[in-house]
Length: 296
Image 1 (cartoon, rainbow, N blue to C red):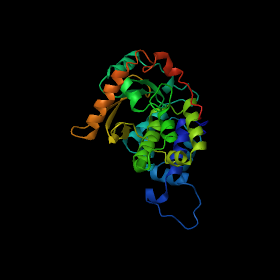
Image 2 (cartoon, rainbow, N blue to C red):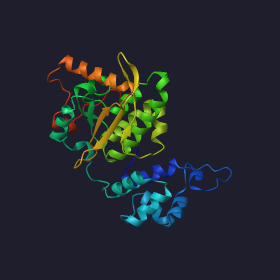
Image 3 (tube, one colour):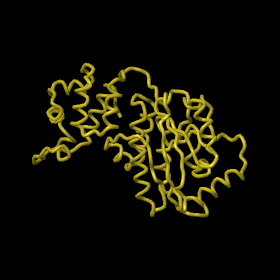
Image 4 (cartoon, rainbow, N blue to C red):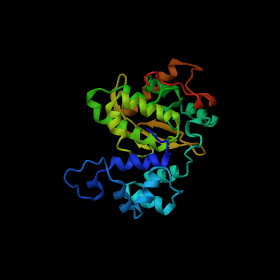
């Protein structure tokens, strides 16, 4: 993940290399060996000069206009969140300090997560490190939802029971796209995560190379809750206003599904355990000093 030329240059290169000629309507000529699209092909699709596009991808161009960025978004097949991301990183200075996981977690967010006493809830920073989790959330996934763990790393470390492999793959793809969307591309923590996972797991390397960008919103994960076994829940993820990349996720069960009884029993056990002041909620300062996972 070499972005010495700046976030915009690195993203343009990575996205260009993730596309195939067929996806953008270009006929593949025999013996083509170029990875992804050629720079000239992107420039033609965007309606800009090849020389100007080359300067952008090398980090030598002037700040592109919104019109040029939108044209590049269309050429690179970016959807709404992808184009939003493109405009956002174009505003970042290549030598400016990272911000996403450096912001302090607002105290009100930590309190809010803890007040969701009747359902699992947790908060993540921009690089998907867990910075707050309530008692039902910790009981739901004790190996994954704990302060300092990284949700994406946990997903790749805990491959599920084979019958839920499709759900695992959807979760892994969703979180990889969310990591790219929420994290500051200049973040050392982001580089650490991507380098570590790429080196240790070819499944991650393949998913990351697709260069997908999506915020994490609604999902319907399969979770294992004793004694109910695998049940499907619903989760909603909300961005925290005024922060860079922080989100809060809350679980619930849809009416008249097995998840209703499973969540009810989970919450009852969490209350019965009476774990008092255990570190289910991070202090505000922890957000800028999340412990690093040894696996990386």
